[in-house]
Image (cartoon, rainbow, N blue to C red):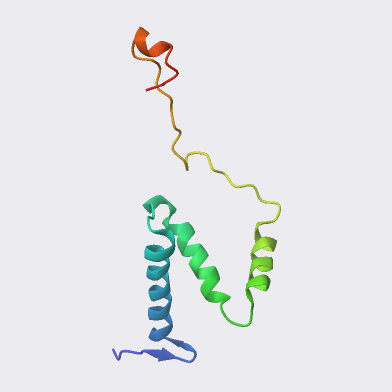
Length: 99
C-alpha cells in the first residue's frame, strides 16, 4: 500500500503544526496538565487552530462566547477542597493558628 502524505488540502504538515502548537501551549501556557482535563486542553487548542485565520482576537472571543452563553460549568470534583485542621491540643486552641 503506497504512503500518502497529501490529500488535497489535508497533509501531514498541518498535523505536525497542530501538535507543535499543542505542545508549546501545554509547556508554556498551562505548565501543568492533569490527565483528566486533557480533553479540555485539546478542545481549546482545536478551537484556536481551526479559527486561527480570517478572525482577529475580538471576533474569536465573540465566537467563543456565543458557544458558551447560557451554559453552566459543572465544577464538582474538579478542585481539591482545602480543609482546616482542628486544634491538636489545648495549647493550640486559643492561638488562632489552625495548624
